[in-house]
Length: 619
Image 1 (tube, rainbow, N blue to C red):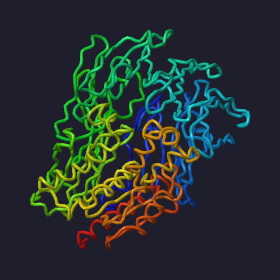
Image 2 (image 1 turned 90 degrees about the horizontal axis):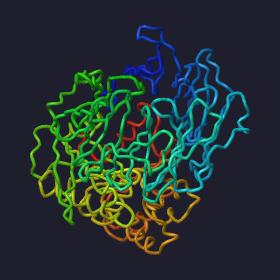
Image 3 (image 1 turned 90 degrees about the vertical axis):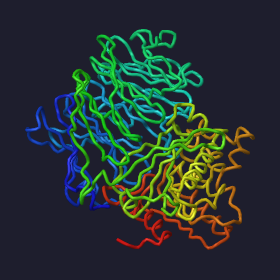
Image 4 (image 1 turned 60 degrees about the vertical axis):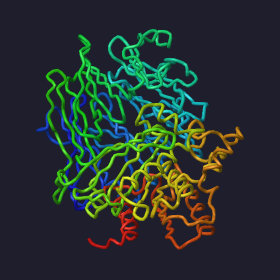
């Protein structure tokens, strides 16, 4: 797997505020170096951060949220050396190389500059629950202890973050839970001022904003389950002043909008696939980009320049390596700027991708994206690894992964089940897979597995499943409900002790999750429903499939003791001689190992587990 990665590589430069920004990897190094060039790519290179040097002596190292000040002289960034997602915020002088003494901990890592080049807004987190609770304002050179609290979120089900409108005219405080959100704005030229409430939170209404000339753009689900695009005047931002620009459509999910001076770029999802729509503001003429594959991911890339007429977008599929294009929105010409190079030889034509639909037990049509190497005989003898997530409205995308070739080249079929709980088929697809409808996610996945067996892609003797975090809960549920369907299951950092966790508000992030799973402490019906599927509470004496369970000691999302106690109960209770393995990464958290190559060891462990069950020993 490592041999397929081009070790000496650079990202595609992104132009912002007079500089080209990029990162580069050196051969054998685990981390990137972050660099920039002024005005032209022929200019001298400026090294912003050498992460390899910074990471020396650390088993885990993460640098996030690199954010350059408007005058290009300073940069804020955040460091986590534990993998607990509690970050220390630093500021570096890019002209002198000095790291200022203004180190702030604990933060979420997220920060934003005021236009005075000395004011930073950041999120202070709770050291116990890790919740993003308070937005503070820091002025460089002043004591951190004197930082001013500008906003405190009292609702512990909300996440809080700060950003800036693309026009750089407004600082934005976002506070959002699963079902409702609220935004505050401040003139970025007056960072010492008070934030103005854009629109007070409304029950079951989500909204987000950006700025475009004489109006704000609002993406919202108010009276629009699949979201719509509205506009609000600059001086009258309340919901009563919102007017529709793109109305709600029952069959299309509006996912986002990218604002340019002369264009709007709208990201939409229809029948599980993303479409990119370009609207010219002068006359509202529109067109869609064409991609031409049955399963793919097209997404808007990094486009920080408001005045640009070029859209940078990303494209990938199960057989197409990650590709970045520049698209002239006026002439409709696109140019491939970079495609991830797969070392050692890769021929896309040797692999086949399909998109099929399984009929769930209640009649819902569930998409499955599939990839395999040419020559597959559909007689039930091939091993198949089925993946899904199915929570929080997060869509499982059909993307390329060079590590997956180690499976496909050994005869495995790989599938992604786009089950309810995700947002592949619109917002209702998500609503039908959470709270008191959560079991639809589990039923969909099992029904997809049975469909693939029926269609002779595989058989129960060769069918495997993998999922992580909430997808790990999915794994626990499907081995509880239908253990005989799977030969082996990989549950990564699995959320398997649902009832206990959701009743303990001291556990990090529990209160953020009440709108996703329910609050069993406050509602007996919710308690009974969660207990009916929580994997830890439903371990019984039966033959479970072969299991590999992984966790991280410092996991902030799913505490390590959840999978550990589930495995302990399984070992004490299960029948049969199937393998049951627990692997704990003692230096990492929810996201696994840091570095460019260390994570490959974790994937290799998963693959060896599968290969050993299939009797595959060839290199």
